[in-house]
Image (cartoon, rainbow, N blue to C red):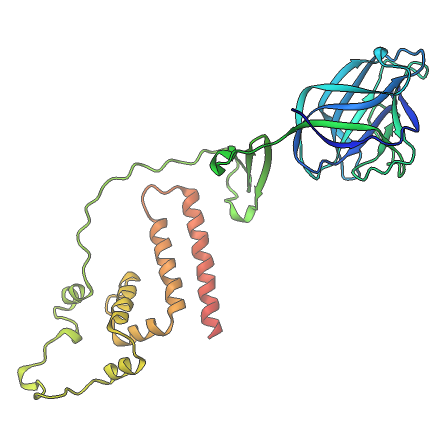
Length: 354
């Protein structure tokens, strides 16, 4: 069942006529998005006249509230069948169109075969108070439109069907289409019966995209058996032929006598900071991830003192590795490199702030 949306039905103080190149219009602004299917207009024909075919249509408006563009919906009716006094006529469009909430539209009436004595008349209120639009007229078949009348509104009702959305948020989006142009990307999204475009700024897209291009599909992943990753101790042993200093056993002759052992200065600093041994292992793991061959006491101190900088370095390292992965598209690699540049800038700011 249709729903009545915008309307103005009071007044009926006079009538303005349409004929030849004299067109009349009433602008209105929907408060809810919906599909308009028909309008009801208070109209009449000039007494004893024959206006012939009368076309009623819906158009968008420009920034000044004047009708513009082609008809969004229209229908042509026989004006000769109208009454000679004001009567509410139901006029159903040949096809419906979507009206978006908050945008101004215009109902337009014209009778191109009529004349001054054979015209189609639209009843109006000479002291109208409709706030969503105004009376407009054109004397050149809609090529130009006069200024809005501050105190006059045609009598109208516009009817249609509310736009409903499925409860499943995934099902709401019925289509997504990407259009690649030089230096920009436009994404067209259709949600139910509504559609909108989203432009992505040129700075975020490769400027070399000058033709429509499908995203390259990554080759199927091939299972690769990787050898177990070397531990820090194993890598140190392989590179230097001996275990790390902290793992080397003291010569028998230098073993401390039974009783409390003397702590090193480094161990004392660790205990004073109350940092558990697991923190040292975590810092070593971070250092190995960033490719540090030998993790000295000094290296661990730096990692523990500069956690924010180390986190940024880790992220840069991961993104660089991802950008070098096989099968990645040029576009994806470009996005990763852009993110690396942003992180490098952030790292520079961190160093300057100290």
